[in-house]
Image (cartoon, rainbow, N blue to C red; front, side, top):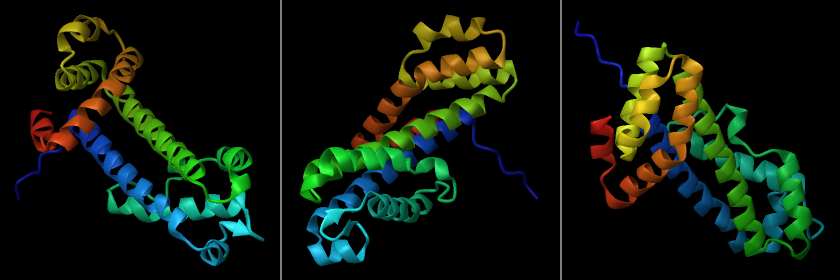
Length: 198
């Protein structure tokens, strides 16, 4: 039986960012539906209690939406690090929730969940690179630098790295640029080309 080739770590990083972007877009659309619900529907869903926003109910609702969407985008719905902290949602409700489900509250809620997902993907990606032997991590990070168009600038730094922690630190510097490149590739329909190059 032929052995299947494991995708490169650079490929996996791009794929994870693509899945995260698709998840984020779907999550934003789903949470914006809150503005369409009638007061009694919000009450039924636990988002409001006695006409006021219920922070714990809003948090539970958003977590349920997130969990359903994570699995559809090849992300782990059981990993609690995708979910925003209750404290963050409670702060939003105190800041925006006095007037009920407003556009400001919903957009802030979306922002918290997207930031949480983005941080999680960046940390997970960096951890993967940190577990590789130095040479393999350098090759992976160079592929990522090439994907972002920064291999000339980052190449000497990557080549000079002496241990996995240093390589992971360089990869962390490239994370935002890689995310931007992936988002642009999705928007322009060239994501498959980016994945092939990895």
